Amino acid sequence: MAKLEILEFPDPRLRLNAQTVEVFDAALKRLADDMLETMYAAPGIGLAATQVNEQKRLLVTDVSEGRDAPLVLVNPELLETSGTEMCQEGCLSFPGVYADVERKEWVRVKAQDVTGKSFELETGGLLAVCIQHEMDHLVGKVFVDYLSPLKRSLLLRKLEKQRRHAG
Ligand code: GNR
Ligand code: NI
Image (cartoon, rainbow, N blue to C red; front, side, top):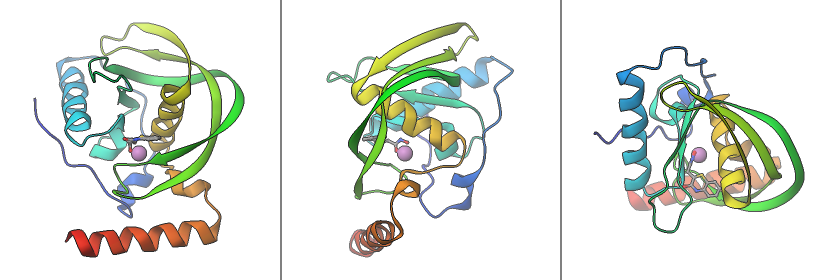
């Protein structure tokens, strides 16, 4: 396994649209494993292939307390949603900044596993939020896109400030 580099805003590659995965081979399995390792090390609760410069419809997540329930979704599709809720979100591509985003409360998702087998998942809470956040990455969308221009510019200034202090 290997830890991958996570692209950070405003890297233009975060805006690319991922392609449907058609080949379920050892390289795909390895990418999923590397993404899980990268997510756990960050640490984060989700990671989209877009964030590691792979334009594939693939995301990984683990919202469990024990960090022992990895989930890999290939070619995810939202089949049904209900309700809305506000959630404070962060993103590994925007280190150190957080903002409230409105998401669907409950989702039914269809996806394939790393071997190509189809499955469905119904979930709410943090996992539902995380899946929506990751699926946005796969179409080049990031959480700050939901903010008003004022909130977004405040958040991006904060991001710059954090970077100056970190660097
Ligand atoms: O680690 C992460 N935490 C998080 C918290 C609230 C809502 C979404 C997320 S996803 C984020 C990891 C990440 O950037 N995934 O793309
Ligand atoms: Ni993110």
